Length: 465
Ligand code: UDX
Image (cartoon, rainbow, N blue to C red; front, side, top):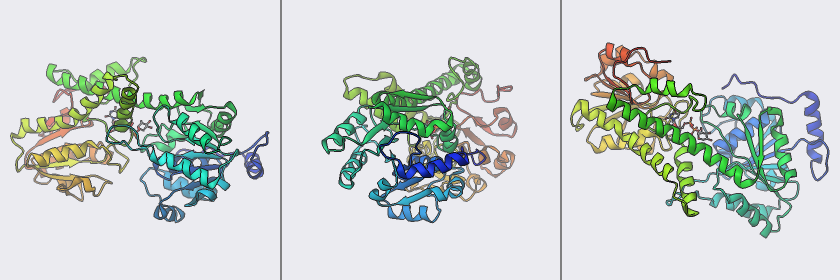
């Protein structure tokens, strides 16, 4: 994403920004809001750096001293294409601090971007959000400030936070919901060129202030109530996850009836009512959002007395999909005891080092439980404590050497583009499972592989592109 052009204010706008920034208080008229971000994690950092690239002064606050120190040294603690470059390009507008007080002094609009991990019950854990409210009371936020919830929170959280703020005498502090729709690996493009910006507010004027921040992007801005904004986020992710589980089930049926899911998905996707994105069959979705958000929405519905049957199946299909590769391997190798299996790619998708809910974790654990020797290579993930027992290789070639089977788990372009003829030569047995339907079955068969994708006719020729 490094080739994206950040949206810069004109010189006049920038001067006006500086002038109005200090005076940005209760007055009306033009203003350039100063931005604060609580939580310099993935979402907070991308939000802060992108807003800085749009010309805003941004102060990021995190409670992790080592992270703040690293950021002050220009080190980005996460892997996201283009982020380091954008951060250093706009370093004059970015400040990192441990102090909430300092951040509040330097900002008007304050994004909350703390994590909301799932609890054992599947509900979202709001303790970090609530401790921010506690802290705001101590430090003294005021009418200048509008809090903007970026963290994904269950519907009803905004009303709860509003009530907590009021109970603490922070009635003047504004509150809006502004969910993020950032894909890892493409987060900067998603932020600067969004399909839409959703802003939920209790008071229109507060929503106007948040909307003004995004106005230079020229994207459609959806203004709504706080609960509706919160729901847009969950419903969007749950729908996309449903699309994936749907096409994965179609793929499984394709295997039974001799159809090719790639052609089926292409044929479906050209129908504008369906759309072609998120119709790639594979070994299931992972990452920090889909699994968590689908469970949280199901849980939220359940807590309100509604059984969200469809999402229950979406989750179950995804769990089973990760395990289907085991069946394919057994079909070709018999038992897996003592067999050397190479996993190519580990991250939950390409262009990220994120291992959260990665299909590779389930796959590796199942293979080890079957007594297989598991070796793995990922272009970025070097080690993960959750991969205990897996031998990490320094290259794809090293991983496949002497392997009885290889599984393409993550469709990194460097892996898809391997010299597969050479790979075949290094392996002991020629079994190749393409967990992402990224390879050409006809070509792989021609190279001598015993090849299987997900829902594909093994040597089908002429697949739609
Ligand atoms: C997602 C949403 O897209 C984003 O809007 C939200 O805010 C955060 O969650 P992300 O988790 O970064 O973003 O990844 P995404 O690119 O959406 O992919 C999620 C998972 O679905 C990956 O494991 C991917 O491999 C899988 N996937 C995606 C499929 O299996 N098939 C598809 O067709 C698309």
